[in-house]
Image (cartoon, rainbow, N blue to C red; front, side, top):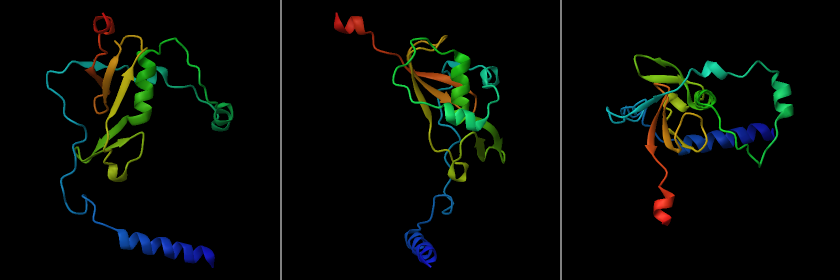
Length: 154
């Protein structure tokens, strides 16, 4: 059948192109989180449970979803930001004595080989700037501040 021949085609290509992964080669795994300066000022985030959405029917949620091109000038709260960060990269638990993290998002081999940075403009309780999310601690660390535009333009 056509389906069987297409399946065979895909299998043959993947076997020919298969290269050993870092994990199969026995290379050390990357750290669970990129290091930061020990004296860095960390910003505690509220528990994401503080603003967890109420229960809603999945069908209704999808049915009501719509794109928006105009955004509110109202800032979000630190608790709302906390929930968004947890939902997109949160650590549910650390397994095997620090070997891997189980997170709210999937990753091949539980490697989660990326960091989350955010540009903050309007969040109650946070100065505008660029922050890095420390998923293991559920905290933020400030990376940079916006330039002093009046001084630069003056």
